Length: 178
Image (tube, rainbow, N blue to C red; front, side, top):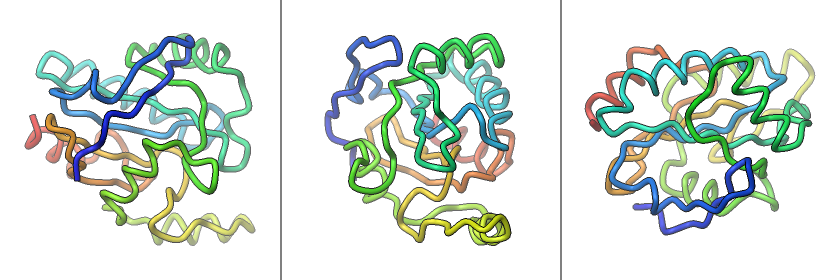
């Protein structure tokens, strides 16, 4: 299933859309600045730096859906990403990725790819160990879940939050899509 033309808002308030990014291979990631996985920003930036000239883009979507780990304003999030990790890829306005307030992009991503690659069960057990009740599939499990989208807008793969940006399977899928 190809993503439809969904209107988006960048963190600076400017308008954008999925259509504006089609023709590139996209890695769409829900992010948070106060998460144990936040250091993945460095790896995401490294992927962007390595493959951007081949038509690859990372799109970051801050969400405060998991443990209130993204409490900041859009401006604060943008500043954090830039100063802490040197992020130069697009960071969008904070919006929900689960539940009734889920943004339309994530509704379509989840419908197109209901299962995750990687080891989501191990991460679910870790969350349970912290006394949390993790989301069941097909919902987004946690921050830093990744959706790989082909140049034509088709969702190619979905990776669990603990799949690091330098994971061989993720890199292989990106290179195959390029």
